[in-house]
Length: 124
Image (cartoon, rainbow, N blue to C red; front, side, top):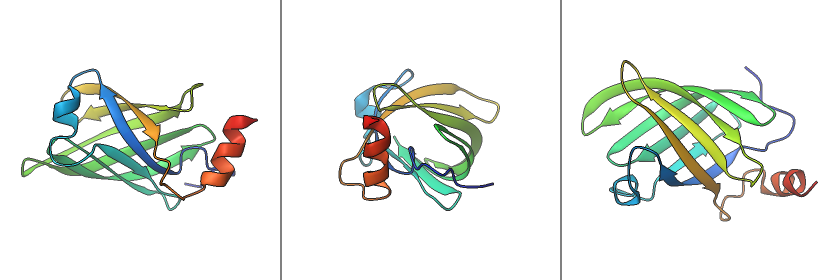
């Protein structure tokens, strides 16, 4: 696995909507977010779920497997996040032997990871 030359997705993203859950559920414990690291690792948290991500990259997309806990139950799955034309990302989040959710996330301005490079890429 390698990190892409352009860090378009690396950083912290605020999950703002989902097709299966309302905003109240997404932000149940803390503001829903996904963190995409440059070290093939990341995190996602929404509702009562928290998970670690193992990432692989392409220039405008990341693919991941994940493992974590939801209300003390161990859960796993896989997914991907893709950069959209409006600068947001669309996350496909699949539970092993379970539901698939589509989430949308927006860049968190307070995120400093690769923010300068990312803004230049989106403006170009």
